[in-house]
Structures are given as structure tokens and as C-alpha cells.
Image 1: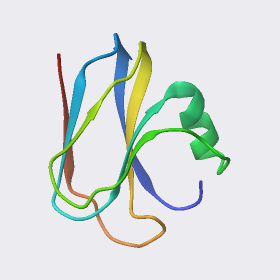
Image 2: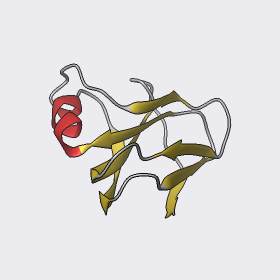
Image 3: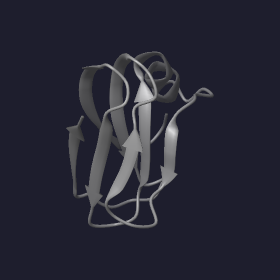
Image 4: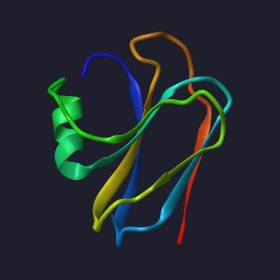
Length: 89
């Protein structure tokens, strides 16, 4: 993936947890597992939950057990992303 992104490592999750992402500006918000993160970083096709955030906070539910990440980017635009991420059961 060309360009800059922010990655939050959520670690191993059981599935069913809710990930809350708070933003001060519009950004792409993706909940992504470790296999798809590798594809994302290589600029290849990948699968994820989420997309462009129209409002904050964004809440996404972890679909299944695995090692999960939140990835934030500006879709090739420039700027700074101000964000926080939390996970709740």
C-alpha cells in the first residue's frame, strides 16, 4: 500500500467484541485480520470490515477469533489523523 496509514494492533480477540474508533476528521477505518493486513500493506486485494467513516465514533464488531488490527488512512490524501481506539466485550 502506498501512502501513510496508522495501524492499531488489537491482539488476539475471541470474536464478538466491539471496536470503537474515534476520529477528529474523515478517514478510512478498516478492521482487518493479520492475513489481510499483509495483503493491504503490499497493495494487493484484501478483505476487511469498515470503509470511509462519515461520522465518529465508528463501531465495528469483530466477526470471528483471530489477531485483529484497525488500519486508518486518508485514501491517498495528505494530512494528519487524530484517533483513538478501544475494544469492549
